[in-house]
Length: 219
Image (cartoon, rainbow, N blue to C red):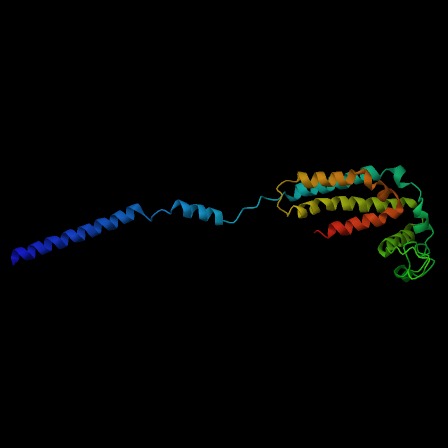
């Protein structure tokens, strides 16, 4: 009996030692590493990192460059002192609405040229009341001096050129990490010769204002 008891005690000690060794082995080894497939899946499910957007300074420089180029091209003394010609005479000099010969409220019922009601058979049917209101403001402050009509047009063109920068970012989804594409787009827009008629002629203000609201719609 005594020998049997001693044998059972020795077996129990061996089992405890094996158990302790397994614990120490588990602590040394640590958690089981993930399978390669699981690691790939984890990397694929990680959210993509977006590139950093250009800083405020770089964006401001691009906008100021577009404005400066616009003014440099269209803001010369000779251009600003140019007379109101062609359709300008009808839309500005010959418009009773612009010249203050009728109540300002008539701007909402007369066509762009200011002489005929939109309901009239003689009407041109063109309707640009916001543009006509800006002509009226010009007339109120400076009369028919063409200088300030041209200054207004150049200012609007410079503003539209500046808007090309944030608009390009919006088209790219605000993900671009480079200022070069928006800056080049704005400079090309400011300098493109297709804008000459719109900026230099008084009636071209309609196209300039349309461009402003169109680009602003992207923001």
